[in-house]
Length: 401
Image (tube, rainbow, N blue to C red; front, side):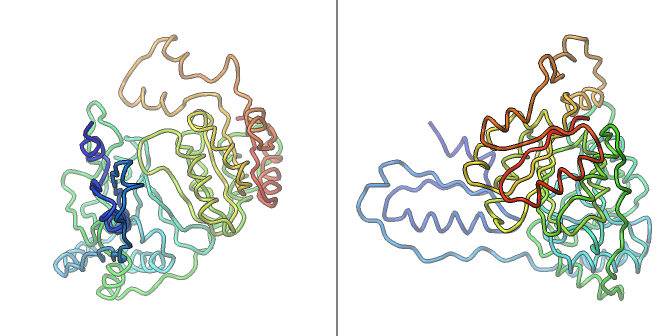
């Protein structure tokens, strides 16, 4: 089998290690490739017998490539684009969204010039919450995304690419920006976005913005858990310094904007189109940042793809609070059926429901060693999240919507 050919479509770097003598150097090269900007997939293929062959030797560390230099021509073009004020949009991603200082500069540029700011639908991490400049995401639904970006004549890209529709939809464009929109790439995916923004701020005379006071939504009142009540409960319950994992495109659509004024948190979300990243992502976050509580905002349908992650959380004693958005339906798949204009019959729709029997996530969690509780009241949900986040170890809350 040609393993390299199989790995190539999903990898930025592929190498086959041929001997024990070169294996350490190959591994160092793979590490350097993976650590290159903006973070890459490196695949090193090693035959099993290398593990016991003689001749292995240590290898010197390999330094990853640095960021691409700032393009002065692109910088001047960005300055000219900002003269259009609110008809210009700054699309920012990657390290800009991870750096509070860069976010403050972005805020200052927007306030100085009148330009608007957006982030892509999918981002590897966003530092957000009270005091930080909130960067709204381009909406996931195709029609909402087109409406969001329709007003803009100029787009300045900083560590991101021109936004495209998640799928090919009938009678809709793949490129979400207007055809007439002029695009300036100030910093590519391999660039230094914070440095580029600093240069842009200097050219337009912008200073870092002041801390933003974004109010929290009102406390949820006793009653059924609606989308709005769910969002309010989570926003008010998030502990400072938490890591939030986000796999909630449909049922949790109100959660992201509601958390603009929450305690400062790191926000992680799926960066591709697969279903089931949420629970493993929360597990990895807890392992990578053991001193921080993790709040997993998890749709019920996608949770079933990787529910076994709960067992790992129990085994490792990870501080993960999982909130299951239990609407008993694959709503994301129903949304995509509507987007492509499909008119499915009852048998097809029946396959997208998660009832008969209804899933019992508390029992599923308990069977893998994770305690849990079922919550049907909105006011109780906020208290349940606060209580679980304050205790070490994993806990699951099934929020019945």
